[in-house]
Image (cartoon, rainbow, N blue to C red):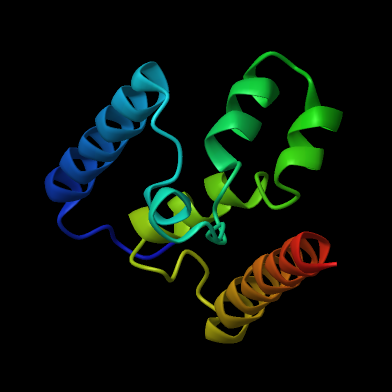
Length: 115
């Protein structure tokens, strides 16, 4: 494992993000991009998916956003300066796979909206 730099800043950003998501959830504001443009963002449905996953309803969570499971992995990458593994190729392969998963899920969502 590589060393973690700026841990306090990362934890502060984490708390800030959780706070913003909590306020958005309580106020039922939804996705700001979707509100303005009418087009969902690649993360639309992620918060609802995690609330359902917390209730152990993984099937519905997966239906809302099939990449919800990738967020803890991405958070781990964030905490470890995007290099949690010594092998750089492994870090790149994991991030590329997650990125491709998000791209495919987003493309499918947009195709379902358009057709």
